[in-house]
Length: 133
Image 1: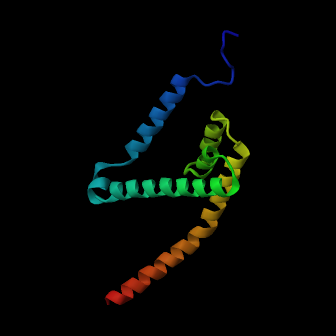
Image 2: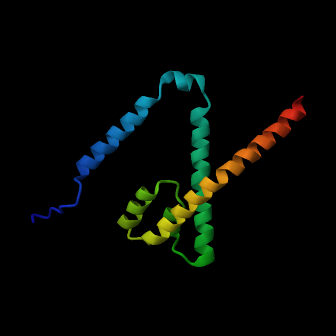
Image 3: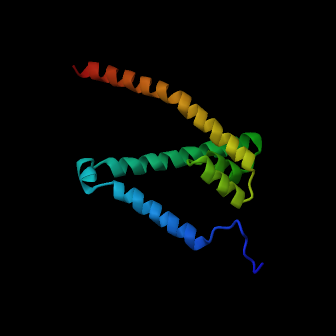
């Protein structure tokens, strides 16, 4: 009735919620933290750029190898939460099950592989530390 969908959240309310979320996150960081850790922001930007480029490269490779639409693969391999990527896939009318399957796989691999990456990093650090002494 009158073009109002009952399940739709008004866009101004979504915008306000995103603004509040950003303010809450920004409030948690203090100037002293950034003064003490001067390289935090440059490394965060490098890390974010690397993750986005790596995700795009994986998406391109999988799209080429298996004939899955590139746009779907970019959303499927993009860094982000499952809920957010499902909403994006739905809004762009992409294959939601494919996007969710890739994100679930990524979560499982990251959770299972993190301990091995940590062990390898400590081993490399130990090797380099022993060379300097």
